[in-house]
Image (cartoon, rainbow, N blue to C red; front, side, top):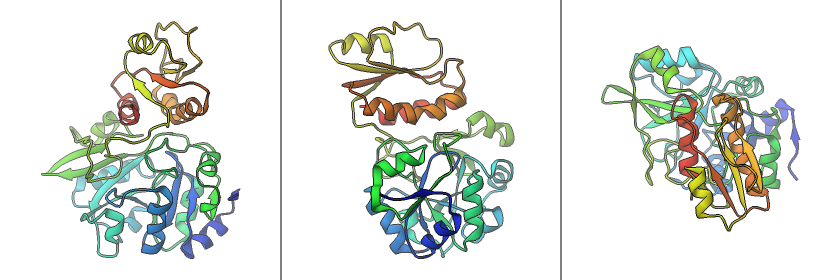
Length: 318
């Protein structure tokens, strides 16, 4: 089985040789390869069984290094970068010619971010190329937030798993770009709309569910467990599926009769959106690995990070 360890120099050497290495970020673990090595990038798609029309995000260590591979087409995006990087923000920027179209699925813009994780930043500073690093899980499945999640999925198909502990944010980055001179959010994620608008004013939501995505994370069906997942009014869903063995995932202090479920997972007893985001993929995995037949999940209030969590649940739902 693939080794889990903290040897940054080993990870660097493997990446230089064109190997795949799982890396930690504050959002989820990424399946990383040299973004300028098309053979290595192709391995990402093959190992994940990811369609080639779904673009990848590249990861770099500084705004100066981002400028080597992409252009800040609008001052507002540079302002966001300076304010929120490193952090759970991805910017969609016009790519330079040194970025292969395999990364962008043939599009002229590339998704870029600087992760807020000390180990990955140290790795990125030690190499001379960006890392393409989508989530380190089979395409469409629940994202990994711990190194053992990655090991369970891929076994010996990776060269190394760089251990950075549990992910602090727990859901993917928010993706922001410019369209018709308007700042647009293309994917809800670990940075809330409220935080973004506080810095640059009103933004437009373009959370498309598409079979031909402009950015990563826009496919209609994504982040899904293997078991049927139903999202909505818990009481009604329980009545509809009362003959099934059910695992329940819910949020806060909802008045739910809890004694009729196989397993119960509370995303946050204190209505903390950050805690809920950290727990979301972990609880989906636990429910998927249990002996239940289906999973029922309540929606969160559609504010702050609750929007991003609801987006993940809707894409994962049966």
